[in-house]
Amino acid sequence: MQIWLQFLTQWLTLIFMLIGLVGLIVPIFPGLVVIWLAALIYGIAAGSFGLKGWIIFILITLLAVFGSIVDNIFMGAKARQSGAAWISIWVSNLAGIIFSLAFTPLIGLLAAPLGLFISEWIHRKNWRPALNTVRAMLVGWGWSFVSRFAIGIAMTGLWMVWAFT
Image (cartoon, rainbow, N blue to C red; front, side, top):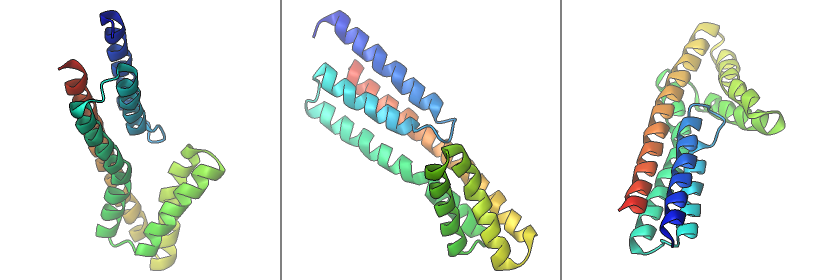
């Protein structure tokens, strides 16, 4: 590959990865998927899927998959620690998914905690503990953001090892 084309490919990939990283701030933006796709396109465009490229791309893929499920792990765990019933957690997840698909992802983001609150309110017959479980779930949401951001940085760092060494 010509040096200017390699330079352009590396920097375009880095720009898209940084967009993915910044996009993680917005909960509905699939930042980890953008980072993963940028690595895939880089590997194809640069023709650098040698042994090192494959090993690093597999690691990037595993991180992307883990990062995609970390939301549910942290949010569900925090809600569960506050005493939320499993059925309430499932109602919350379903409300988030259904409303995201039926309306917009932003509505789904609002529907998930609302679904948890309503389910816990019905289950506990008291709105205060229901509100506490929602608060705990939102703390879990914060931890999942921190985790996904760290995973995004790790994915970008692995790609930099692949591209610049």
